[in-house]
Length: 347
Ligand SMILES: *Cc1c(COP(=O)(O)O)cnc(C)c1O
Image (cartoon, rainbow, N blue to C red):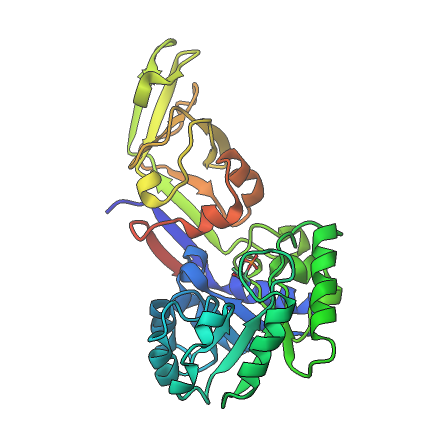
């Protein structure tokens, strides 16, 4: 079998939740959208269920699958995408966001007494949510519904930047808009947990902080490690072109190793060299990303053999640095890994 695998250390999920709890007294909603950023929502939910107050996802399919593993609240972060979605929300007792007034049309046709409505306020990201005036109208409608609870929420646009001015403005708008309202409130994602402690309110919504790699300076750890195995080594002479478009040319005589992983596995496409590790030593890739292969410049190292393990990232890698090499962000690096990669869960 192809040995391209994502190892997932489940104990690091618990560690990361414990780190989050050192930074906040608020309840935790674990954001497990996009299959828990590529790690498997069901495995993540089973592991951390008793440490969180709820989970959140984007699609009904995600929510339906997760319902097999937990009775805790599951929030649909974009609410319904069509009115009929309320049927399944009713049946499976999902929580849901309301960000636009069309989502409230005909809502009284459904029995939503087991759901919490998360009413979304636009505080300055200008993506989803009600502006001030509309918000109060929507709140008045929602207050009349027979539902389990109302939670007021918003989302921060730049919480990863400490002392960010736009974020401070958003926090202020949220406080002003909701201050006289006696409902639970939820504003921050991972960045807000670490960088804006004054804005935690009742429920925080970490995603990446649970999965590690972006905020490790605060004590979280990578939960995953992506590795492959050398399946071919060839000696090449200086001047030899490697791979598609002959883009990469050997400057010196060297060995080229190939590993069976590529953008078909969700690795972000790249043309500039990426750093990988073999037997603890760093090497650079040679040539453009392929769908199914990556070539590595093994230089003059003749100790490396076919079958040797190549770490694209490991539990102790700096994923922020690596994602910069890929010209992307940590989220993209993690969430993109496709179903073709075998996943192995370690305790
Ligand atoms: C994805 C998402 C989060 C989690 O964001 P992280 O930066 O991964 O912590 C929180 N809230 C909402 C509304 C989201 O869409």
